[in-house]
Image (tube, rainbow, N blue to C red; front, side, top):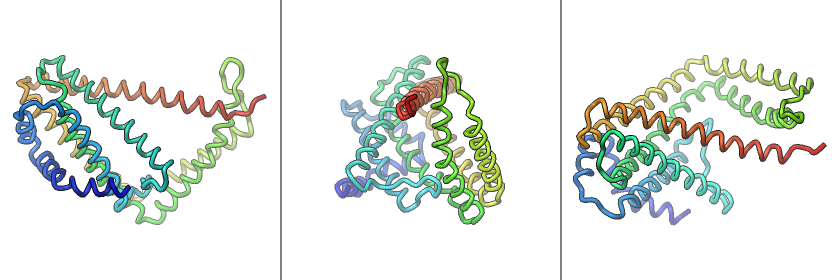
Length: 282
């Protein structure tokens, strides 16, 4: 871990240079980057920036952790392997998202190379990754209210208590795959869910919760507008009309959404298989 910290520190000046230009002058940044001669290592440079952004976001999250979903630094080799695997998986997802977005741009007439597009894509994704750490931490404001904090702890405990009951319910299926009614388990599960719903509603109606959630939503909206400005600037740089730029954005969002659903189904299938393997045999 020490080597990674040293690498981050060494790259911070260059990161802040790109960060400030990209954040405050996205149009000018895109023009400057598009004017650079094409290099054979553009994709690797984009990947390096994404990795650096991930590490910086990880270290910032240690000083400004999200109260309801804190991220811990790996304490041993096994934890490091899980973190590295998750980061590598996310990196591939971003690469495929970039490929989908570039394919949509090609459909409306963009003639530039994928490597040049991916470098810009990586810059904006990396900066978004860092800014989302601050956006997610805004929900910590709600935890100043003891009612919200204690309610959230109770919800976390309820979620852990629901896991074995849900597993028993899902394991109890007939030959056709239909769930077989287990009155005791079903009643207990329904009661737990009703209690959790009451606790959740009590927490989400508190003023500080609404304030934190509102600020988080506002920052996410600002980020979305910033990304749309960058997308529009790239389209104009590629001599696209406004209609084609909007069409490419909608196509990209739609295809990425469909891909995310497909990925979710794949992950759900893997999780269900693991659950069924743990079911008691009759």
